[in-house]
Image (cartoon, rainbow, N blue to C red):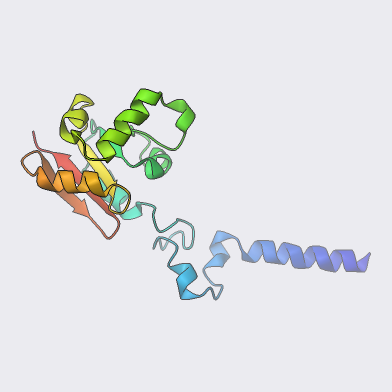
Length: 162
């Protein structure tokens, strides 16, 4: 009976130490720590590919009626972090019709992207540099239509020029 109590105490202790408030005090190696976004209030919580800084910029600068095109990988985070800003798409594949996925792929590949984005009244585009390089290149070429308003190591935000 005593051994069971010791085992339970050890397991409970390990569980408590791994919780977010205490996790940052553990001596994880640097390569592991670099897998996470630098969020002092929530250390070792968000994956490094989470657009934490870009969302902070959007909170401060996006107009209330902004229409956002985003990479599907960050759609769920955007829904949580910016609940009043509709996203173009997210990873819940079953919720979106095949035509929207086809459109997303066309835009992501940089094919006729400005006209497709304008048909959907998109005012801002949030891109991951390494996920949609074709669309990024297209927006960089179309400076008469799109203005770079934010960038960090992983993300850029373009705004449509009226």
